Length: 152
Image (tube, rainbow, N blue to C red):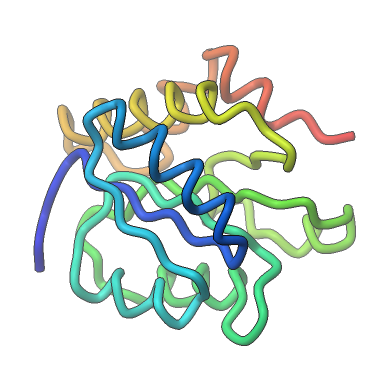
């Protein structure tokens, strides 16, 4: 398994979103893998260790909820910080397990703000052996996470 403290996985069925996020994250010196669906994401999660996963919920075939199920059942050692990217309605968001995710990014979003948050998560993850909840606690006071967690 390829391990990298600054490795990020972007999962979204929208090619424009994948390209925008990949481009902005690479400009911040992150290694970025991209998956167009949940099946590709699960395959990449089996091959690589990620500091952060940006995960779209609503995708055809294997959706983001299934990827979250895979992450919960996988022996990853140090699980990634998971930020959900979605335009889903409240009923879909209510299905999320707060123990599995660290933040919600509502579409449309500011790519630079997301990049700063992802960089902070990757750096914290790379510096310490803390689990995902400790990381969430460490960044919870940041304006980025507060902004990303606000729901309409």
